[in-house]
Amino acid sequence: MKKVLKFFITFMLCINSVNVFAQYIEKQIDLYHLSFENKNLTTILDSIILHEKKCNYYDCNLLFSFDVQKFEDNYISIVIESNNSIDLLLGLDPYGFFYYKNHMFIVDGDSLEELFSICGQKVSFKYLEEDLDYIIEQNTKRKYDKNTIIELYFIIDDSFSQWSYIYINGEFIFEGKSSFCN
Image 1 (tube, one colour):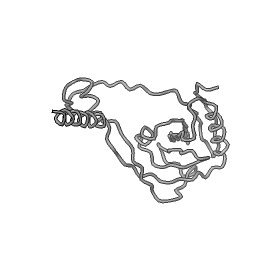
Image 2 (tube, rainbow, N blue to C red; image 1 turned 90 degrees about the horizontal axis):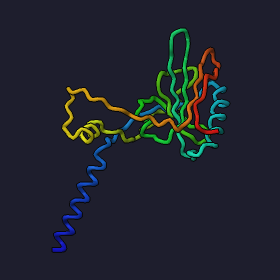
Image 3 (cartoon, rainbow, N blue to C red; image 1 turned 180 degrees about the vertical axis):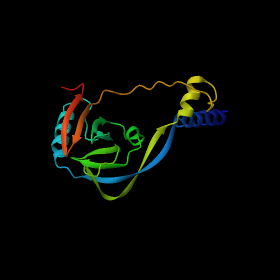
Image 4 (cartoon, one colour; image 1 turned 90 degrees about the vertical axis):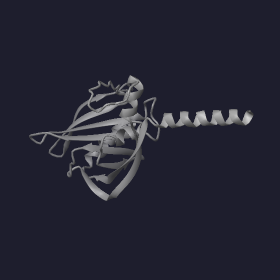
């Protein structure tokens, strides 16, 4: 009787643990290792890291996203955000990364050759992505039909800091900062 009970409990735990991990899909992305060409960027990155060290969420594993968006008339928007989730940042479909002062910066958006150059071959990263089929089925308690429109509300974690710059003619123009830190 005890063996049957042990088997049943073990079986139930196994089923439950598989269900917990089913909400994520393991993915892999290959990113270029980048180096930055514009030395003015070091001043900006130094001030960002110095600011982040004052924040209560700071640790030596803090990551940053570096988003580049090109617009007409040579208008280039750069947004740098701190974050603690490599899974989230790798899920943004970035194309490269670089390290500065032991912090990883994940670069996404438009490629900007005057700012970054490829300094090595691609590096593979594994990450977890939320399985939207699983999330929908768990929240609606029905099988997900791809032909059905379902509204999902995602809550964006805005507890981290964000800096905005305009990049014109090789110069960075500070546009603004959003942070809950002092």
